[in-house]
Amino acid sequence: MRNVQLAGKTVPLIGQGTWRMGEDSQRREQEIAALRLGLEMGLSLIDTAEMYAEGGAETLVGQALRGVSEPYCLVSKVYPQHASRQGVVSACERSLRRLGVDRLDLYLLHWPGSHPLEETLEGFETLRASGKIGAWGLSNFDLGDLADADLSNCAAQQVLYNPQARGIEYDLLPWAQQRRMPIMAYCPIAQGGRFLEHPALQAIAVRHRVTPAEVCLAWVIRSTGVIAIPKAVDPVHVRLNARAATLELDSEDLARLDQAFPPPTRKQRLKMV
Ligand SMILES: NC(=O)c1ccc[n+]([C@@H]2O[C@H](COP(=O)([O-])OP(=O)(O)OC[C@H]3O[C@@H](n4cnc5c(N)ncnc54)[C@H](OP(=O)(O)O)[C@@H]3O)[C@@H](O)[C@H]2O)c1
Image (tube, rainbow, N blue to C red):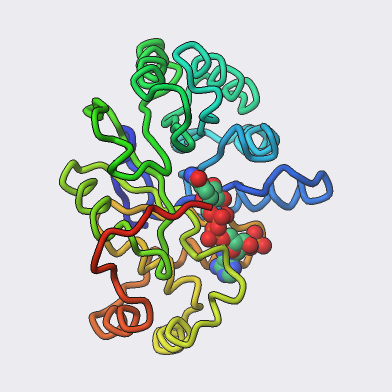
């Protein structure tokens, strides 16, 4: 599996998302099994958030990690409404309890909120100094949201990125690459479903004897410093997502995707879900 440095750890270019996990007790065993399968397949980066199932996803991730020896890389996110100087510390401690761990590798502010960013960053630095987090980062921040912030310790940005949402290529992606700040691409397969039936994705998938989802993931991680965090509960999906890290798209594939999903030629507002 190809790797990148994130928050001081070596992580795979494809990780595991957990949004919508932990919401339904009937799916619990399947979700835990999916995360464990992903870990076995080398998808050792897990992304979660206090928002997901209102803590339920973190509890589920904690169960999936029980008995698993490191190395894995654990990322969670704080709600903007909890992101005051002290609130961020308390929220992190709650997340740690749910996850059953002493430390998060990376803690992100989920999206811009009303607490001044500098206060949130002070809270993050307190957590870092106490060892409760290894590093901090941001999510859903456009360049305009970052104007005066001291980002010298910002370890990552997590944003929406897939072939039909390429806006970050215009400004945010080169900005992050210049700073060697990894981008964690969320919704890397545009939440699956009908999007994967797009003729361009299908044609490239046939050419390489893979699936359209793998094409999508290989496309997302083609740029330096971009990590994809697909969420998958179906074990077939988990295996395919792990395999996608070995797919190399060539210039013909990339040109075809550029034609189907043109790159941005001017500033676009950062998309969010
Ligand atoms: N920071 C943020 O604001 C933010 C926002 C959204 C998401 N995220 C993070 O990013 C992660 C990924 O985003 P997402 O979950 O919204 O969307 P996604 O990963 O693009 O898509 C997930 C959907 O695709 C399906 N799928 C997964 N692998 C597949 C494959 N190989 N072939 C076909 N279908 C496949 C999944 O089905 P099954 O589950 O049935 O396998 C699920 O329905 C989230 O889980 C979360 O951790 C962060």
